[in-house]
Length: 108
Image (cartoon, rainbow, N blue to C red; front, side, top):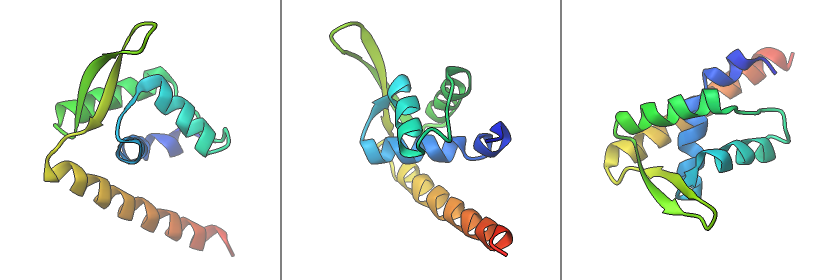
């Protein structure tokens, strides 16, 4: 799959998964994306972490380090403010509308 397809949805994917999971760390997000898409979509660290940091800087995500037994990991979760939840809902509606439109174009 072309990387440009994924790039346009990367923030949406990350926010959706974190909202769904409650919290997660970077590597787990990459594995979750691969698992849920049956390997069609893969994320690398070079694409993932800049988006995580951007969303954190925008105040949509908060992070904290937690001891995982082997080493501390940085976990991300949605910020506890209405704008974060609203953004997740808005992105989900927008992504679904776009996918529906694409299905209309390519189903004929």
